[in-house]
Structure formats: C-alpha cells, structure tokens
Image (cartoon, rainbow, N blue to C red; front, side, top):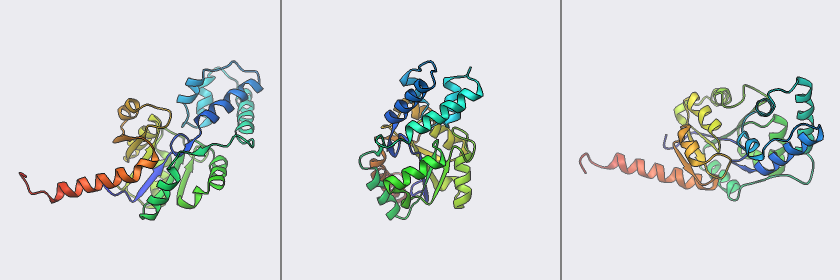
Length: 230
C-alpha cells in the first residue's frame, strides 16, 4: 500500500476536534435524566463506538426505556446551537490536497447519519467524500462491516485502501477488513494503544497525512530502483 486508491477517515477525534464537546454533552444528558455520573476519561475512550454500544458499556444495568431517554437527551444536547466542534487545524487543507491528488475519500464513523450529514453541511467538507457509512446504517465499530460496505460500494480491493483513525476500534475494524490503517495521535487513544491494535504507523494528525504518503511512496520507489546488494 504505497498509493491507496481509497482513503477512509474516521470522523470524531480524527477529522473533527470534537471529543470535549461529545463528553460534555453526554455528561449533561446524564444529568438531565438523573442517572449516576460517569467518569469523563471513561467516556472519552469510548468515542468512536456506536452510541448504543457506548451506553451499554457505561450503563450495563440500565433498562431500555432509560437508554432511549438518554439517547434523546444526548442528541438534543449535541445538536444544540453554539457548541459546534471544528475540524483539527490543517485537516481541511490536507483533505482537499488528497482529493486533488485523485484519491477517493470516504468516512466510516460512529456518528449517526443525521450527525455526519450535519457536520458535512456545517464544515463544507462533504464535497470531498464520495462514500460514507455511519453507525446507524450497519454494525458499528470495531466490526468490519462499515469498511466492507465502503469497499463494495467503491469496487475497491482491501489492499488498495487505507483507514485513518484515532482509536483502537478503527485499527481493529481495518485489520478485520484486511485494510491497512494509520493512527493519528490527536484523538482519544495513545500511540502505544494504536500500534498494539494494528496501526501501520501513527502520525500527529490528518494534516500530516499527505507528507507521510509522499515519503512512503518515495521510499518505496528508491527501494525498487536500488540494485541488489547496494
């Protein structure tokens, strides 16, 4: 994988600097319906999973009706005006660059379709992504279904694709789909955790991805061009 035809991005924590807003919205939603508080660090490390899975891990003893109430409260909090998250510095320029180079771009996210489409509109980034899959459309991470659906939609072989994400769930999803993965250190899981989950490399952020791909391609070309024994 030196020049991937298809680059698939996680969204929250990878493209969007949204972890703090997600945790705060979840904490306020918990307060809204009078549930026991949960540790912010525990919430943060679950970002990237589907919301139903997050709630099941935070409140395994909760009844279905309380889960539904928390979902409603969270979505109301997270979609309220005035607290919108923003892309990480340099992410938009890097995505535009990769698009201009001819890569097909996609998103595989734990967000709902409604939430991703809203972010696409607010940031203007939707124009760059040809394919996307959300947690409410298939089995969420770390299952490989999102990537497998995108590969099928795009008629792309796994070895011609690259996954970019900030969590071990992204790395495990990619591994199980047979897709190479690169981690970004700007999100919620640290470098050691990303590498242990199967990351090919960990770069600082999405802004560093074009240069990383260029360097990898150049290094591969040099290796191919060198005579045996040199």
